[in-house]
Image (cartoon, rainbow, N blue to C red; front, side, top):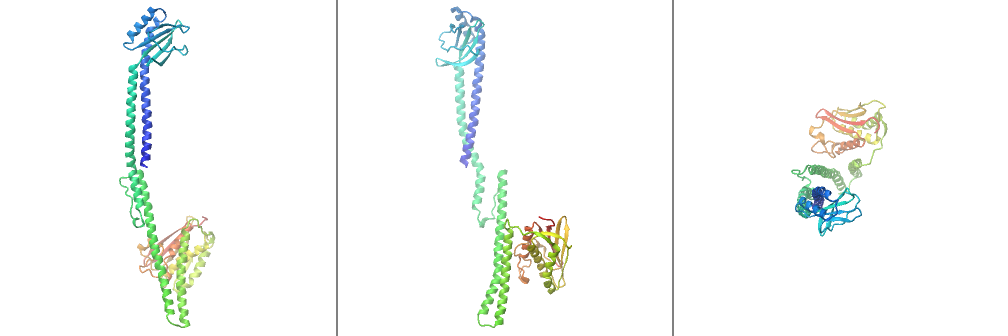
Length: 447
């Protein structure tokens, strides 16, 4: 990666420097050419009055005048008649004859291995005047200039390559550090985080995002570990009870009533295990993407009445009052089975934690196109430190995590999953010694 970045950087820099040196060379050459062109026009102004004669004295006069004006520079001149015949010409003039088209014009021509800047312009009598000045000094200066720029170009390429490599290494170092940290992360090192100190703003944002991902992963693995431990704990007790009872029953011959009692107890433990597995399967399915519930239009009052009818005997046996206050015919779109399961879990939980003589009430209120279903009890309540965790799987507010009343620690987790499936919310309020209220908030209209 560093080498590729260096190559790109050096290549880009080379092209930019090459373009800059080319422009400078062209600009310098054009400036020299303009200076020589001005000199040629000055010499042409001197030679024009003498160019109309065709005798040797005129040639000598032009040569003398141009020599004085041209200082020490080598000057060539030529006067060409109307039919292309040379009438006057300086000695040693080997420049090619000009064309009469497009006059006046200026060009650079080579004669005898020397570069000449040549001006050709018409004379009033139909003749043409050609004046050339040699520019060895200018050409040498331009050559040295090009050589200097070539040297600068070569040095620049080397410096750009070195600086590009250093810059690439400096830029890649934080990325390599991030990659090294990510490579070393294992299940046992999920607590490690990337150090964002000293990182550029762009990479700091990337590192923070990566750290947030690690936070979520760590939390997920912690929950998974806790879930595995809780599951093992939940299944170990009924399986141990089942095995112990069967071993005792088989240790010696017993009466039919004893065997019947043992089998009944074993059936209870199997039922408990089945409930745990069914609840876990439901939670797993609820968390799967693309598993929508079978929503239908329901009469909320009728569904609540069905739940109350099922739990009335249990409430009466516990000496509790179980009532509901809901407007008849109140519509709701929900999965019928899941609605009854959610309400049933909350009512069963309230019965289990409310003492004799207590009251359990289901109230329904319409709030801003939403239905608020509240299950209130006058039970023992929940301590504030437990409230944030009561919807977690296998969580129980009592430290002993007892199984009294068939409490699996999954009921409220199932309720929350049901509400999530329907786009609703569940919340809980509780005061120790006064009771608990669980609220289900769901849209009254179709989702």
